[in-house]
Image (cartoon, rainbow, N blue to C red; front, side, top):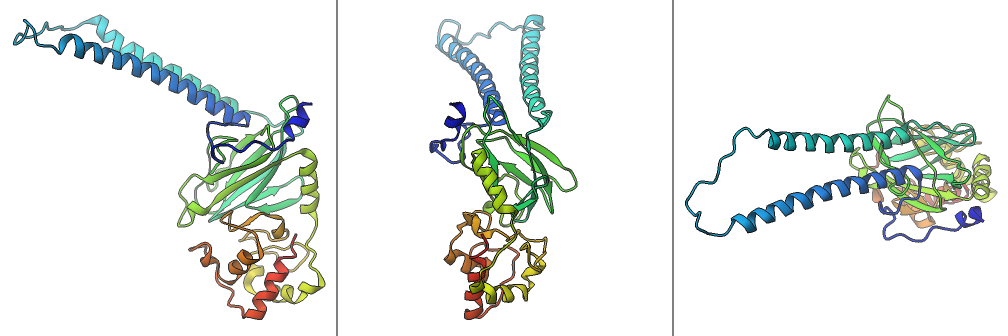
Length: 329
């Protein structure tokens, strides 16, 4: 019955990026380490504050010793050892605790049933490639839920196409940077289905704040259906043929891919199944006809500094291209 329970949508947290509600082993490890560090530093605070209060209460009152110099202590071996050894031991304990968590997360080996995803950070969007499954998508990551009794984690290879980015979905894992020419790796094994939100956590340019992360954790059946749907080539209905011809005659095909058509660009997001996504512009706006039309007409209206040129289409052409894009499911 555990699998059935995991298939239920996760309850709404206080915040979609709630760091106090981890639902994956790496995030739980970071959370447990944070609590341990908080307990140690809290204990230090209590001891130091108690000694301070004791000193103020005991020696802060005026008395017969007023005006006299207190007893001077020189070269106390006990004191010097105490304020040297104790802080060193505390630092060593915290270092070993952090090293243990970092090692357990970074050195984990993917099991045979692990999903492999290559994440490529661009200014200012995310590209997701599933090499063994033949799927390429953008901005919305889909992964299967992992049953703790039979773990099926997802391993992410992190690359950057331009500058430094940082992949951070608080409820699933800690921050990991995407650095040009330096592949990094992380993994997640979410225990509940649902939508988990995150953010590029490394300033990467003018649109950094709108480089959002959306991770859809699905049951295995739902994930398999999504993969099958994403593996298909684009199928535009006859009503959208005019819009397709206009799209393929513009510079859009130099940046975007629509599988099964002449559009094979690699600089922008793959649009083959654009309308299967809930959002556009890296999660900035809902994916509906109005937002799509505005985005095609002038991306800067939705995402200033997006680096995408306006298409300069007339009203009739704009309507036709929007209709074509609306068929890419």
